[in-house]
Length: 242
Image (cartoon, helix red, strand yellow):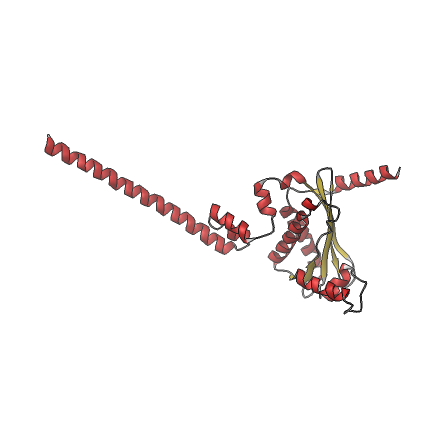
Protein backbone atom coordinates (compact mmCIF):
# COMPACT_ATOMS: atom_id res chain seq x y z
CA UNK A 1 0.00 0.00 0.00
CA UNK A 2 2.80 2.39 0.95
CA UNK A 3 4.61 1.59 -2.31
CA UNK A 4 1.48 2.42 -4.30
CA UNK A 5 1.08 5.75 -2.50
CA UNK A 6 4.75 6.59 -3.10
CA UNK A 7 4.38 5.71 -6.81
CA UNK A 8 1.31 7.96 -7.11
CA UNK A 9 3.15 10.86 -5.43
CA UNK A 10 6.11 10.47 -7.82
CA UNK A 11 3.77 10.23 -10.80
CA UNK A 12 1.91 13.38 -9.78
CA UNK A 13 5.21 15.23 -9.30
CA UNK A 14 6.29 14.27 -12.81
CA UNK A 15 2.94 15.41 -14.24
CA UNK A 16 3.17 18.78 -12.46
CA UNK A 17 6.82 19.33 -13.31
CA UNK A 18 7.54 21.70 -16.16
CA UNK A 19 8.89 20.09 -19.33
CA UNK A 20 11.98 21.66 -20.90
CA UNK A 21 14.07 20.68 -23.92
CA UNK A 22 17.47 21.48 -22.40
CA UNK A 23 19.24 22.76 -19.32
CA UNK A 24 19.79 26.15 -20.96
CA UNK A 25 16.12 27.09 -21.30
CA UNK A 26 15.37 25.68 -17.86
CA UNK A 27 18.20 27.69 -16.23
CA UNK A 28 17.07 30.83 -18.00
CA UNK A 29 13.49 30.58 -16.72
CA UNK A 30 14.65 29.80 -13.16
CA UNK A 31 17.06 32.77 -13.22
CA UNK A 32 14.32 35.11 -14.47
CA UNK A 33 12.10 34.07 -11.55
CA UNK A 34 14.91 34.75 -9.08
CA UNK A 35 15.44 38.22 -10.55
CA UNK A 36 11.73 38.96 -10.32
CA UNK A 37 11.66 38.07 -6.62
CA UNK A 38 14.97 39.85 -5.99
CA UNK A 39 13.57 43.11 -7.38
CA UNK A 40 10.55 42.78 -5.10
CA UNK A 41 12.87 42.74 -2.09
CA UNK A 42 14.18 46.21 -3.02
CA UNK A 43 17.56 45.42 -1.49
CA UNK A 44 19.97 45.76 -4.43
CA UNK A 45 23.04 45.68 -2.17
CA UNK A 46 22.18 42.25 -0.85
CA UNK A 47 23.03 40.51 -4.11
CA UNK A 48 25.70 37.96 -3.12
CA UNK A 49 24.48 34.61 -4.39
CA UNK A 50 25.92 31.13 -3.89
CA UNK A 51 25.05 28.17 -6.11
CA UNK A 52 25.60 24.94 -4.19
CA UNK A 53 26.47 21.69 -5.99
CA UNK A 54 23.23 19.84 -6.69
CA UNK A 55 22.56 16.59 -4.88
CA UNK A 56 23.07 13.85 -7.48
CA UNK A 57 23.40 10.96 -5.04
CA UNK A 58 20.31 9.28 -6.53
CA UNK A 59 21.85 9.18 -10.01
CA UNK A 60 24.16 6.59 -11.49
CA UNK A 61 27.80 7.60 -11.78
CA UNK A 62 27.57 8.12 -15.56
CA UNK A 63 24.54 10.41 -15.10
CA UNK A 64 26.00 12.67 -12.42
CA UNK A 65 27.69 15.03 -14.87
CA UNK A 66 24.23 16.50 -15.52
CA UNK A 67 24.45 18.06 -12.06
CA UNK A 68 27.73 19.86 -12.74
CA UNK A 69 26.48 20.95 -16.17
CA UNK A 70 23.37 22.49 -14.61
CA UNK A 71 25.48 24.20 -11.92
CA UNK A 72 27.62 25.78 -14.64
CA UNK A 73 24.54 26.84 -16.53
CA UNK A 74 22.95 28.50 -13.50
CA UNK A 75 26.14 30.38 -12.64
CA UNK A 76 26.52 31.50 -16.27
CA UNK A 77 22.92 32.74 -16.49
CA UNK A 78 23.15 34.56 -13.15
CA UNK A 79 26.42 36.25 -14.15
CA UNK A 80 24.95 37.32 -17.47
CA UNK A 81 22.17 39.29 -15.73
CA UNK A 82 24.66 41.66 -14.08
CA UNK A 83 22.39 41.66 -11.03
CA UNK A 84 24.40 39.39 -8.73
CA UNK A 85 27.87 38.85 -7.32
CA UNK A 86 28.59 35.13 -7.51
CA UNK A 87 30.31 33.45 -4.57
CA UNK A 88 32.54 30.84 -6.16
CA UNK A 89 32.82 27.21 -5.17
CA UNK A 90 36.28 27.66 -3.67
CA UNK A 91 34.85 30.10 -1.10
CA UNK A 92 32.11 27.63 -0.17
CA UNK A 93 34.65 24.81 0.09
CA UNK A 94 36.82 26.97 2.34
CA UNK A 95 33.93 27.62 4.72
CA UNK A 96 33.01 23.92 4.72
CA UNK A 97 36.60 23.03 5.56
CA UNK A 98 36.62 25.52 8.45
CA UNK A 99 33.43 23.97 9.79
CA UNK A 100 34.96 20.49 9.58
CA UNK A 101 38.05 21.70 11.46
CA UNK A 102 35.92 23.39 14.09
CA UNK A 103 37.29 26.85 13.32
CA UNK A 104 33.84 28.44 13.21
CA UNK A 105 32.38 26.98 16.39
CA UNK A 106 29.84 25.13 14.24
CA UNK A 107 31.64 21.82 13.90
CA UNK A 108 28.51 19.79 13.13
CA UNK A 109 26.42 22.31 11.20
CA UNK A 110 26.90 21.84 7.43
CA UNK A 111 23.51 23.23 6.48
CA UNK A 112 23.73 25.20 3.19
CA UNK A 113 22.09 28.17 4.87
CA UNK A 114 24.79 28.24 7.54
CA UNK A 115 27.58 27.81 5.00
CA UNK A 116 26.06 30.55 2.84
CA UNK A 117 25.90 32.92 5.81
CA UNK A 118 29.55 32.30 6.70
CA UNK A 119 30.48 32.87 3.04
CA UNK A 120 28.65 36.25 3.11
CA UNK A 121 25.93 35.07 0.75
CA UNK A 122 22.52 36.74 0.77
CA UNK A 123 20.86 34.17 -1.46
CA UNK A 124 21.61 30.46 -1.89
CA UNK A 125 20.52 28.06 -4.60
CA UNK A 126 20.22 24.37 -3.78
CA UNK A 127 18.62 21.42 -5.49
CA UNK A 128 18.61 17.74 -6.32
CA UNK A 129 18.31 15.52 -9.37
CA UNK A 130 16.74 12.09 -9.68
CA UNK A 131 16.06 9.85 -12.67
CA UNK A 132 12.63 8.28 -13.16
CA UNK A 133 11.07 6.71 -16.24
CA UNK A 134 13.68 8.01 -18.67
CA UNK A 135 13.41 11.57 -17.32
CA UNK A 136 15.63 13.65 -15.09
CA UNK A 137 13.54 15.17 -12.29
CA UNK A 138 15.24 18.39 -11.21
CA UNK A 139 14.25 20.30 -8.08
CA UNK A 140 15.67 23.80 -7.61
CA UNK A 141 15.25 26.21 -4.74
CA UNK A 142 16.47 29.76 -4.10
CA UNK A 143 16.36 30.91 -0.48
CA UNK A 144 17.19 34.03 1.51
CA UNK A 145 20.05 33.35 3.92
CA UNK A 146 18.97 35.94 6.49
CA UNK A 147 15.45 34.63 7.02
CA UNK A 148 15.51 31.19 5.41
CA UNK A 149 12.51 32.23 3.33
CA UNK A 150 12.16 30.45 -0.02
CA UNK A 151 12.17 32.89 -2.93
CA UNK A 152 11.64 30.41 -5.74
CA UNK A 153 10.97 26.67 -5.68
CA UNK A 154 10.54 24.76 -8.94
CA UNK A 155 10.49 21.18 -10.23
CA UNK A 156 11.44 20.46 -13.85
CA UNK A 157 11.68 17.37 -16.01
CA UNK A 158 14.21 16.79 -18.75
CA UNK A 159 14.01 13.78 -21.06
CA UNK A 160 17.30 11.87 -21.14
CA UNK A 161 17.14 11.63 -24.94
CA UNK A 162 17.59 15.41 -25.06
CA UNK A 163 21.17 14.89 -23.88
CA UNK A 164 22.15 12.47 -26.63
CA UNK A 165 22.74 14.60 -29.73
CA UNK A 166 26.19 16.07 -30.44
CA UNK A 167 24.85 19.62 -30.61
CA UNK A 168 23.13 19.26 -27.22
CA UNK A 169 26.19 17.72 -25.61
CA UNK A 170 28.34 20.59 -26.85
CA UNK A 171 25.80 23.04 -25.49
CA UNK A 172 25.42 21.37 -22.08
CA UNK A 173 29.05 20.53 -21.46
CA UNK A 174 30.77 22.79 -18.88
CA UNK A 175 32.58 25.52 -20.78
CA UNK A 176 36.08 24.48 -21.74
CA UNK A 177 38.80 25.65 -24.14
CA UNK A 178 38.47 22.39 -26.09
CA UNK A 179 34.79 22.96 -26.87
CA UNK A 180 35.39 26.66 -27.61
CA UNK A 181 38.26 25.74 -29.95
CA UNK A 182 36.17 23.10 -31.73
CA UNK A 183 33.39 25.61 -32.33
CA UNK A 184 35.84 28.26 -33.56
CA UNK A 185 37.27 25.78 -36.09
CA UNK A 186 33.79 25.09 -37.46
CA UNK A 187 32.64 28.73 -37.56
CA UNK A 188 34.80 31.79 -36.74
CA UNK A 189 33.42 33.51 -33.64
CA UNK A 190 31.25 30.59 -32.46
CA UNK A 191 33.73 29.78 -29.71
CA UNK A 192 33.56 33.36 -28.44
CA UNK A 193 29.74 33.28 -28.39
CA UNK A 194 30.05 30.03 -26.41
CA UNK A 195 32.19 31.89 -23.84
CA UNK A 196 29.66 34.77 -23.69
CA UNK A 197 32.05 37.12 -25.52
CA UNK A 198 29.45 38.34 -27.99
CA UNK A 199 31.32 41.44 -29.20
CA UNK A 200 34.50 39.48 -29.97
CA UNK A 201 32.41 36.72 -31.54
CA UNK A 202 30.60 39.21 -33.78
CA UNK A 203 33.89 40.79 -34.90
CA UNK A 204 35.48 37.41 -35.68
CA UNK A 205 32.38 36.16 -37.45
CA UNK A 206 32.19 39.34 -39.54
CA UNK A 207 35.90 39.13 -40.30
CA UNK A 208 35.54 35.48 -41.29
CA UNK A 209 32.64 36.23 -43.62
CA UNK A 210 34.51 39.18 -45.13
CA UNK A 211 37.61 37.03 -45.69
CA UNK A 212 35.51 34.29 -47.25
CA UNK A 213 33.80 36.72 -49.62
CA UNK A 214 37.14 38.37 -50.48
CA UNK A 215 38.71 34.99 -51.19
CA UNK A 216 35.77 34.10 -53.42
CA UNK A 217 35.99 37.37 -55.35
CA UNK A 218 39.78 37.00 -55.70
CA UNK A 219 39.44 33.44 -56.98
CA UNK A 220 36.77 34.59 -59.45
CA UNK A 221 38.99 37.41 -60.76
CA UNK A 222 41.99 35.08 -61.14
CA UNK A 223 39.84 32.59 -63.03
CA UNK A 224 38.45 35.41 -65.18
CA UNK A 225 41.97 36.59 -66.08
CA UNK A 226 43.00 33.05 -66.94
CA UNK A 227 39.95 32.67 -69.17
CA UNK A 228 40.70 35.97 -70.93
CA UNK A 229 44.33 34.90 -71.37
CA UNK A 230 43.32 31.62 -72.95
CA UNK A 231 40.87 33.34 -75.28
CA UNK A 232 43.51 35.95 -76.26
CA UNK A 233 46.01 33.19 -76.99
CA UNK A 234 43.45 31.41 -79.17
CA UNK A 235 42.72 34.63 -81.07
CA UNK A 236 46.45 35.23 -81.55
CA UNK A 237 47.04 31.69 -82.84
CA UNK A 238 44.05 31.86 -85.13
CA UNK A 239 45.19 35.19 -86.61
CA UNK A 240 48.80 34.25 -87.33
CA UNK A 241 48.39 30.58 -88.14
CA UNK A 242 45.56 30.90 -90.64
